[in-house]
Length: 189
Image (tube, rainbow, N blue to C red; front, side, top):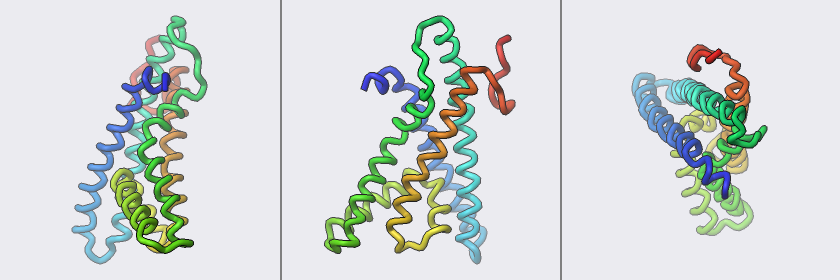
């Protein structure tokens, strides 16, 4: 809990970025589906792949800057070194996603016990998770049929991994002041 308190600004910032990309994905997906009436599934897939790449790029540049600022605090001795700092802030920012995925996993009991509670739990959790991860929705819908609940749940869990990986790499590179893109500020050397 201390980690969350100390780093709440960065964690909330990453969550707000996800919300912005969610809205962006909805707007662009709606426009693409309207333009491509015949091939809506393919258009939705292309838009979602673009949205995911854009999301990861925004995460990378944001967390790279966090890593750069963190390197100054580390050099001055104001902060302890934490090799998994980027992954930790990404996991905290993705807690709502992981919670909804957990509810979806509990809702999988609908396969063994087809009663309304588990069916409703899975449905509501899937709806909210689809809204929260709108940028991945087209990819999941393209890869999986709508009645393969186990695979949908696994892909929903897996959708958290790219953001955790990108933030960890970005933070490590920012702390070392290694630039991979011109979108990050120039070094102060």
